[in-house]
Image (cartoon, rainbow, N blue to C red; front, side):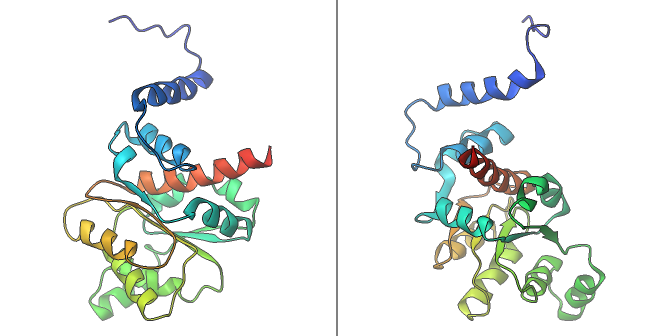
Length: 213
């Protein structure tokens, strides 16, 4: 197979990738308004299953974009997700990205309480006097703790992106989030990851930028 590198410019690679994704999706039904999110997840992972396993609560895209416009901040459960989110675009709306996983107080609380750091991170987020979006791509225990805090009336997130990857309690934790009245974007099943969590955040940010013209 011959690879034509001379006629493929770097700026054209992403454009052509999205053309291929659109072609291969064909007439696969997607929730109106979520198409770019789905396509970006496929672009990030080369996995077309995201066209079927991404679940969106009602009007979640509009609600998420409004929260970002109002300065919502994003809390992630990994430094990888934090690194991947476009902080420059988010800052235009007054938002920042946080990850508490490496904080000494979080490590101490997790040890004292016998819980995961991800659980302790969700508790630390309670101390923030900000509108919050949670982008969870690794730890199902973070989703479980968010569910508990929501049920107890202690937390009301603007959005939960629930896409942890793995085998233990992953499926169940995602189902819990879908039982709440909080806006969510969830990847049902075992698939997901920090890259997918960041990808969904960026898709929302890029959609907002496009709306600005």
